[in-house]
Length: 263
Image (tube, rainbow, N blue to C red):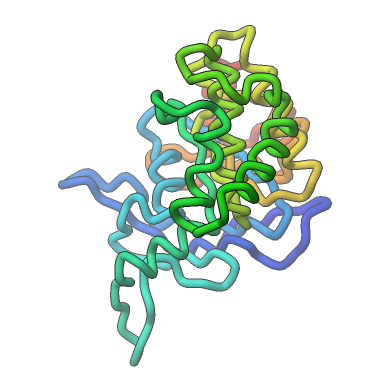
């Protein structure tokens, strides 16, 4: 059964994942994952290194091609069109259009080093969506203000701390007005004192109703913000449920051992 999210989120699924399998050569990394994320829901995905959690996120954004199963985002089948009960790969332009609705923030910031914070945030709307530069500039400044970096708009990435660069990366994703935000361990590359400034932005996004899937080891964030905590190990969902309940009383021995290492 698909893992369902409960709480303040809508019951309508923004993300539907059904029986997804993914192999890298002879290694099956995802072994039939099924999961629902409702509109406005925050799903936190945890697990040991190599468990498949980041691969799952990359499959949702079609950065990885699944071997079997289906993924829908807001009712659209990701990566394919279905005709006569057969799947056909989308053309690159169609896939690009799908990805515009899905923001993704990685462990590393991937900012353009030769562009300022403002220019990094403007780039996608101008180049991909054809938004006029002045309109894109106004929107970018609003987003930099939202992530607390308006005063750093003219700074280049090398002039920013890691936490500041990650906040610019979040603003850059939001500039495309996504329906869904994916976070792949967004604080793992940061010094400990910089983690909270990024988590604060993510808390604000969750409070605003953004649908989010977050791969993280920040259990405090999962407990506070998440609607559902999903523990993946060996390519399968081993345990899931309300973060406050499953963190306080893990039912699975493997999950209990994992928590003993990260808490």
